[in-house]
Image 1 (tube, helix red, strand yellow):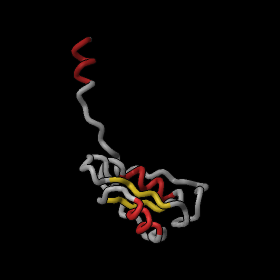
Image 2 (spheres, helix red, strand yellow; image 1 turned 120 degrees about the horizontal axis):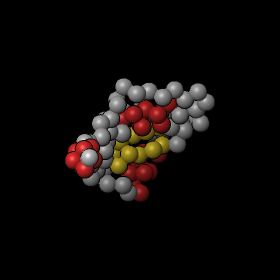
Image 3 (cartoon, one colour; image 1 turned 60 degrees about the horizontal axis):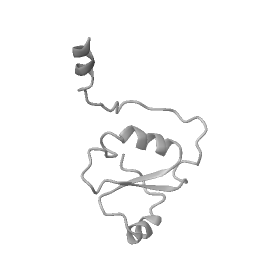
Image 4 (cartoon, one colour; image 1 turned 180 degrees about the horizontal axis):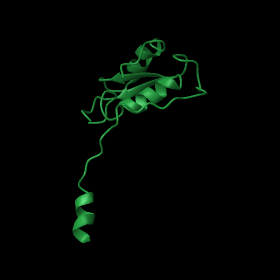
Length: 91
């Protein structure tokens, strides 16, 4: 029994990129919600094209604007992306 428990803890999480959750009452009209910059500058495995792709799609369907950022978060980056509210997400 102990061996079974230990072998179960080794598995990695795998993203179901085909999962789509239909938001029946979006918080915002598509593309009109707040901008969300997803910080990908730290070379993490968690990216909008990887393990967070489904979450990014969910945010988009709820009306948020989602953009991945390869730059360090700064005031300049936020100002630059403020005008990108209607830009299509790269998820």
